[in-house]
Image (tube, each protein chain N blue to C red):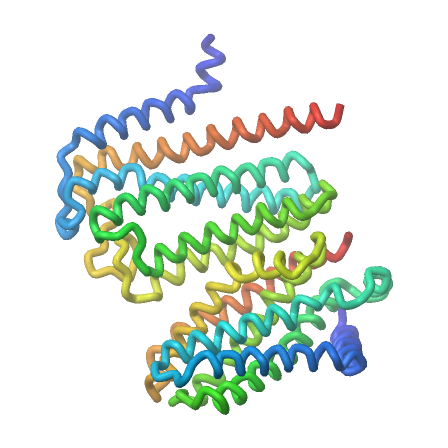
Length: 228
Length: 219
């Protein structure tokens, strides 16, 4: 029993953190100076931003495993890379969905033409193309190699797209980062909100890792069954 | 890899292109007809934004069309032959440089033809030409790598488009920003940041392609 807890402590932590984030996020009194337009919808910061953290963590993981695949050509690394990208995509879609709900409340429309929003959407297209590329190659080794190369190549351009370009674009309605007059970074949040924000981010990242681990295991089992 | 190797390979690419003139002529005709369709579709373009976006979208399609053949033009058996006599880096660099030459010619040609039909809206010609050169280099290097990747899949044109359009966007967005300011103001100031970004994207892509291509080439 003790051994089990030692192994699974982070999953328990993820559950507790997210429970805390959901209960705390809905009961805390929210108001942020400079972002009065958000009003009560400010609570979404605990969930929407978490999706972004989850996606970024997963895509970095996928990038690292693609690099590792090219060093040893081990199929396990390829499985890890593709599942990391899949979970990253899931977070990306949820991030856009939560963002659209939020945007509808604060900006009056679910989608506005903004460098940050468009960057996020094109980022998803880049990684959807990764799935299509994998689907179009039959041979497993060739598929693993070609998609690892594409993943490494795409990751750099994704970084330029979502991190560098929006900061250069100048005008942006979306908070965080440069290009916005009333920039709100987590450190600008009121202390009470920060007390929920940081644990929530950690919780989402851990949940992402959990889903990723389960999917990797599932795929490994499928591989064993297929090889039999 | 040696400079001589690259030089010979570029020479081979150029001779191959001149031997199969219909390919190059096909791309030129594609370019001319696309611009002509645009000319017929729009009575007169009055705002610079439309001019700018149309120009770059046409150039993007021309580039994808022109470069997608890079690795599927020759027969796979000949690739094995190249594999035995040349280093992968030399192959990649020769393809990138050749595609850069091709893209420079195509972009200049489309610029001239576009001006001829749609009217000249460029105020700062030198800035615009700089953008064109940097754009040709960026499109050539990104699309060469994507063409190499797509050629490994059951290669078809749609895969090339799916893979390259989102990946090219950081480059294309920056290009459109710089060229937009070349259409609206005469001075260079305020664009140096973007030009540095363009150079950074180009250099990063070429380094990445240089490092990754050997894995792709060794089939």
